[in-house]
Image (cartoon, rainbow, N blue to C red):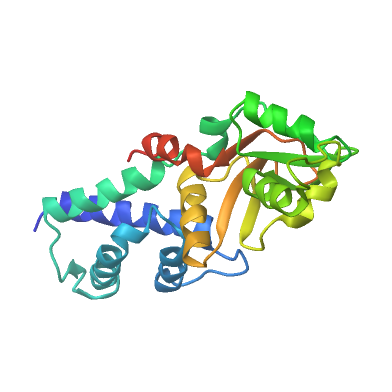
Length: 238
């Protein structure tokens, strides 16, 4: 038996346990590996491809740690298995935070500003959405789709009143359109997964808004939209 490979396997497994406890633990008590893995499999894009492998590795780890004969391991770990688990750990550990990739100045609109001004800004800067604020308080997200629905409902002849405040356009948003706030430390893969999760629920995540602690009351540090997903995938390693 390769004792070095076994030690490497157990060390790598401990790293996976730490990752799961940090990212998916409740913090209230120590949770079983299987419980943490099941929770992560539902929401963690980094874990999902390796969930079945990790279940098997958990069985092997339990055999190594809890079942010994006269202090000797009852199973052997070869180099390939140890290397594979170490590769999984490397992928989990390299997960970047969303702020490091999508830190940027975010263009916003005032709720009381004319919608015509917002449209000019969106066209000029090639934006599909604008966070809307009133007296520095976040109100909602103005999207191109929302504007289109408002235009369709308010055109008289060939004319439309572009002096209408942005705040009066927002109620035309479809219920499937969503946004989310995340802290600057949010893993990039979790943000990518959020877009997929909303799609599975029949919703459209228009933007992920980045603040210091993920609160709507905080200053915007960046934004991620569906159009940014190719960049996000590239930064996350494919």
